Length: 268
Length: 318
Ligand SMILES: Nc1ncnc2c1ncn2[C@@H]1O[C@H](COP(=O)(O)OP(=O)(O)OP(=O)(O)O)[C@@H](O)[C@H]1O
Ligand SMILES: [Mg+2]
Image (cartoon, rainbow over all chains, first blue to last red; front, side, top):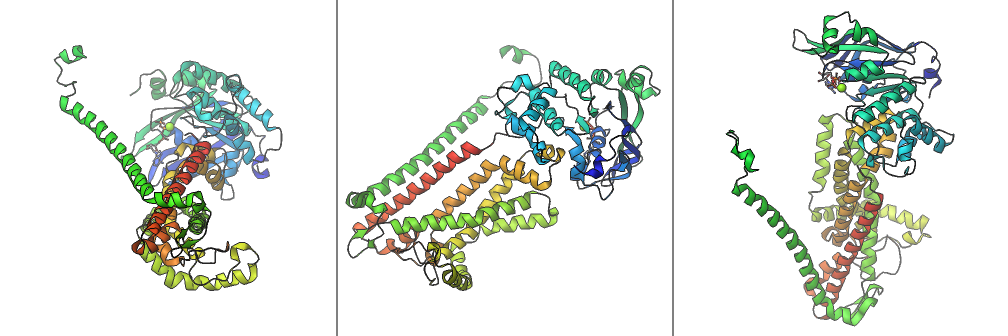
């Protein structure tokens, strides 16, 4: 981890975007995004399919850099540093901003090696066994797997795999964790476990989560951004934030008609 | 089922007898073909074994450890050829595996824009289509003149290493090994590339998401995940190298005795021996050649079984 990226960890807002426009080639996927993400909070992104929630999320750890046609206009600041400045190394960004994906994607390695993968990359010198145990405990998976750490991560059930992926993400002790519909493949009980987990994790981390589950957003998050999508004159369907506020406000007293319609399930 | 078809629905939910017949026929047909392949293999092995029987009875297992191949004395041993087969194949793998896997990495990642990448992929695959006699000619007229000074230097300076203990005399084991390397390179590259491309994109993203660099992702995630496919390609290539006849016969020097471990010396392989001697052979010699063929058969089998074990042991579940 670089001193450059670590230096400014103290500020209250972790991310701050200014007039962010996100493009895939000529296609404007998301426009005019200006939001602040508060430290040690859970921010939910909700909105209809294709409105650019995943696109926005993946800007924050520069994972979109893997897509050739991707580029942005405007600014994203991470603790007051321009995240897309040329001297910022995306690999270092991803070491501070972890990600959990929609589909559980454990490595075809042992449970232990899945967790140890990230710390090893960072040259972790401490007690690896302890770190693995602690990460699995934080992800509420320890009791399920403590006797079979050598078993393949890919042999776990879907819900266990997803918790393994969460444990893997927190093992590197990131600053922020991005979650793209982490519960979409899970049963209600696993989902609740993960929501409980989020509440514990936010003591230490800042969490941003994309979800299609309204209850989940209202139960688990502190802030909610409602995205919508609108076709422009050229027929491009561009996403934008309709309303961004405290979660209670979004769900109980939204200012916009569209938000009201969406959160109450009368959308379309 | 009956109740669903009673609906006055416009859809026909019943499978016609014809489609059932086609399905069943397909199952039986493929089973029959699979059995036929096995039978064919068994018949060939039996035939070769039967023809080899006189030599097997006369020389026994001593055939495998004797390096004397004398038509005049009627004494036959295939050690020279077994050694030649293994060493040329080993040299070929030693060179072709790292390069082939390297090419596969290069062509499976986005180092190059597709416009440039596609032609290269095509060219690599074209290497596999060059007839082996052409490789042989190229070896004689280009590679051997090029290698000779290198061989002389190796012998002069590193001659104390048994591998370089003889002065090169044009063709030899090393030249055959090198051409084999070029011949099997496209097999390894193409199959390894397919194996790497087939690794799910999610794994790649997971690795990048944890802050792995491109190279960490390739070496710690993609290569292990593609291991069984890559190993399969290497095995296929090894089989090809062990059985390759024409190019090797043109380049190895076809010496039927071996008196050193030097890769600079001339030698022969089982298949080059067969190609050289079969036309004029008679009597016990034919039987000895058949025995040698059987040994090659066995060698390939052993290598494949070993490879299968290795792959089972180390391959990762996706
Ligand atoms: N790699 C890409 N190249 C080009 N366009 C893309 C790419 N990824 C996404 N898009 C486009 O960007 C828009 C937003 O997609 P995104 O995946 O961010 O939506 P989303 O809000 O996450 O939807 P969902 O809820 O279905 O996951 C869509 O129109 C999509 O077609
Ligand atoms: Mg999405």
